[in-house]
Every structure is written in C-alpha cells, then in structure tokens.
Length: 378
Ligand code: ZN
Ligand code: ZN
Ligand code: ZN
Image (cartoon, rainbow, N blue to C red; front, side, top):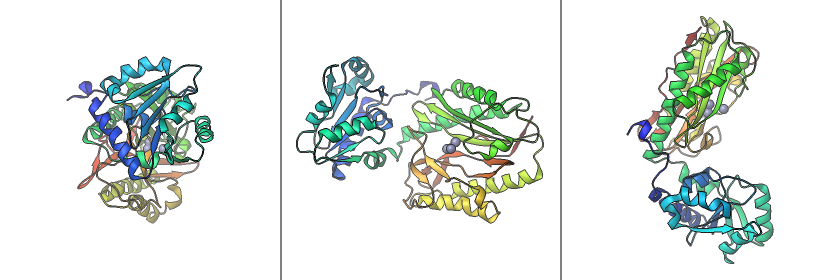
C-alpha cells in the first residue's frame, strides 16, 4: 500500500475492539466508568476528532456496559457521519440547548459508580460541574488506563508513524539543500511548514528554526533574525500525517563548520547513537537517557544537556513513555518515542539530533532516515 492509498481511518472493527479493551482496562483498575471528552483519547477510541467546545461532548464508557456518546444535538449528524458503522455499537444520546448534559452523563453512570476516570484534558469547568453532581463518586484521571492501551502501537500505527517520519525527512532534506544564509528564521520556518504539507502532512504543527545564538534555545520561536555564515541552525519540525505525529531535528552549519562546533557535534552524534543502541524491550526508560547523558557528560558538556532524551509519540506529539531519569518503567516492544539529546552553549550555539524510534524485539527501529551528518549549507 502506498502512502497515497493509506486510509486515515481504521475500520470500525478496530475502534469497537479499542472500546472493549478500554472497558476491560478500566475494570482491571477498579474504575467503574471512563468519561472521555474530545482529546487524543477520544480520537483513539472513536476514530474522529469531535469539536471540543463549551457544549459538552462526552463518551461514557462503563466498565460493565455498552458505551454511550452524549453530544449536542447539532453535533449528531457529524458524529453519525464520522462514526460510520461504529455508530451502531454506541448509544448516541443527543441533548438539546435547554437540557443539562451533565445530568445526562450522571444518569448514564447509574447510582452504583464509586470511581470514575475523566480525560486528563477535560475542561476544568466540566470536571467541577461533574464533581458537584456526582456526590461521593471518586474522580480520577483517565491517563493511566488510556495510556496502557495507547502506548504500545499496532503494526498499522507504526506504519503511519513511519510515513509521517518519512514525510518529515523529505521536508528536512529539502530545507537543508539550502540556501539559508540571508533568510530570516521566520521565512525559513514558513517554508518548512509548506514543505511538511507538500509531503503529505495534514497539519504542520511546529517548525523551529534557531540560528546562531538562538540555536542554544531548545524551543526557540523563529523570529526576524537573518541567518548568516558561521551560524549553527537547529531545525526541529513536525506535524500530523494520517493522524499520527512526526517530529525530527537536524542541525546544520552555515558555511564551513568551526572546529569547536565539529567537536561538539561529534559528541552529540555519538550520544544519540548510544541512546538508540540502548533501546530494547525490558530496558528501563531512564537507561536510554543515561546512555546519551553519560557520553555528553564525559565530554564535559553535561550542564549543557538541559532536557530529557525523549518523549513518546503517536496521536499526540508528546505522550508516554518519557525517556527521562526517574522513569524506571521497562520499555515494551511497540512503543514509539523520540531520541533527541542536545548540547546548548548559551550565547554561542547549540545542536540537537532527533529521530523517532520504535522499540522492536531486537532493538530500535529508527523511523527517520535523513542523514545525521553535520551538513554545511550555503
Ligand atoms: Zn521539544
Ligand atoms: Zn522535535
Ligand atoms: Zn521531540
């Protein structure tokens, strides 16, 4: 199947199965029901992005019963259209403008609920309203149950992540073919967003261009600075393709790289490779961070590596597992995450190399394939 043929949607059977697994996961955790408002969890379970507005849309997934979808009546046609065959597996409960949707949700929970999990990104106004209505019910966040399902990707999800990575690589290679000198960061960033869309992304979500001293600021907001000879330039780009995220960073040098920068980059490249090589099922996530940090620290740049080594990626750009000191959870086959060490010398320059990898049975499957060499651009 080529990229062009790839359907953005999974068949209804996949979502029906996810709904059943989510109910089982909730039950196993002593949760009587999951309340899921429009978020990545909602997309994961139902396969479409509902508008997350002040009017309540909420999937009520009881651990012991059939799922119900409470939504404003005006959203019902969209939901039925988007849900397709999955709509038959759900009770769709529309509410009118004069109804109280929170009472509808409370009614669907029944009197027996003792513990209810709500989406981490449910609006505070909704949580507080539910809190007031649900009396003695204990409210907890849904992320432990939902991430247990979402963190391990199916083969079809990995294929989507791979296509997203390749599309980002294409954009990266195009921008690295230069020239960059004489162009403002903002202009290069806008060009990258177009390249991401041209390569098949539905959305271009970020295009960090940090040049010269700005390359030492990991989340630099591209501005009016004009890129010049002698600059290191950090390019960190990504978006969504077929519903799944891309996120890759390459660092280039404008003109012939300074000897000092070459040394820094060589250390960084070795650290990034070491972290990739540390990936295997059963390895604590923090060991991958340590593998990169050890090399950077031994080279004397320990204080200049000011962030974790990586983050999970899937329907969201940042999700579990986090590759960070203190996370002793073992990696599992099928988990997808970034490996992105960086070295940042304030006021001078910085560099980062970022790939998305999937933990495979024998080690890391590196999804990005654009060159990690230090490229000199015009
Ligand atoms: Zn970042
Ligand atoms: Zn990134
Ligand atoms: Zn990242």
